[in-house]
Image (tube, rainbow, N blue to C red):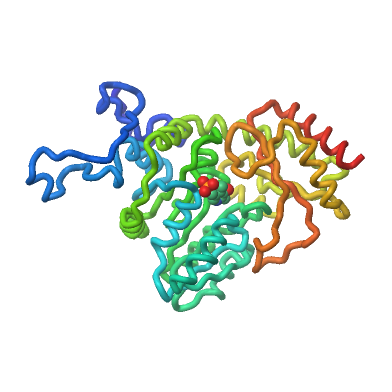
Amino acid sequence: MKNNTSKSETKLDTKLAHAGRDPANFHGFVNPPVVHASTVLYPDSQTLVTGSQKYSYARRGNPTTDSLEDALKEIEGAAGVKLANSGLNAISLAILSCVKAGDHILIADTAYGPTRHFADTVLPGLNVAVEYYDPSLGAGIKSLYKPNTTAVFTEAPGSLTFEMMDVPAVAATAHEIGATVLMDNTWASPLYCQPLSFGVDLSIQAGTKYIVGHSDVMLGTIAASEKAWDNLHKLHGAMGSHVAPDDVYLGLRGLRTLSVRLERHEKNTAFVLNWLKDQPAVGALRYPALESDPGYEIWKRDFSGASGLCGFDFTKGTTEAQAHAFLDALTLFGLGYSWGGFESLAIPVRLKGMRSATPIDPDLHAIRLHIGLEDPEDLIKDLEQSLDKAFK
Ligand SMILES: *Cc1c(COP(=O)(O)O)cnc(C)c1O
């Protein structure tokens, strides 16, 4: 029962199964208990006033939150991990931990829409200047640095449009000026991309997506480098963020099967895209794991796998009515935003107000798909009958 293998020597799949568990501490039970708590009692006043007890107040953590944080710390190779109420909450907390009044933050133009909303509505009021950059700049982002640039926010591939960016090159230039580098790594999950290994300081996950994996919990995670951990830990404590233990437990449960689920998402996605590419109504595919994709080389270098989130453009001349007819005819694909569960989803890509530093085609009619764990032949049949109806 005892695990004598040094934890750092194990591979990621092994970590997914073992990290953050300590059965010997919980009477041998495989999983940690779900600790419902607010009050923590102290044995005596001396312990209370010196704060020498491991747990002091449930808002700051309990054995259930520790279990998920410890597991992710090991998987991400982090100095520390904090949980958040949602992916967006992880993003806002991570950003607030590394900017102060008078600072300048650079954010990838392809960042998740609500990240922009947070940056545009909250940061200016705190006197933090927000500037969006074209993610294709790579190391060229240097030309945008100002004396007060303290944070660079990255995301790969980009939300909705799936452009890859050279995060390691951006991180190297950011470190030259002492800026903190953040990455929204939700698409690949910490299994297929390890941002801290190539210079990212704050690696962010919408745990809602693949970590939870079952479309039933909102959760965020932030893994910090040595340099960024202290500030993150302090900010997180000061903000009073806390995730309910049942939700944390479901995150932990999802994490154990992340690898087998992602493997199937990736396989099904390759199968579906291989069919989609030959359909007359379908234009460009958007998925960095395809050799034909402009981001393929960077994806191959920085990622060890691809997930089930992808997109495609309709051919030029497709009308909005046709795009909607396609979506409305789908029966297995649900129409919904929050992806990462076991089921397939589709949404129309709407970029209005979402890009300010990169050119976009205002007439673009594109679809974002999440390819789930269904039999991919059934998914193709569903796509085929919907395309037939919309383009008859
Ligand atoms: C969904 C998503 C988020 C936000 O996660 P929530 O848990 O829904 O708040 C952040 N970033 C990306 C890339 C996402 O897809």
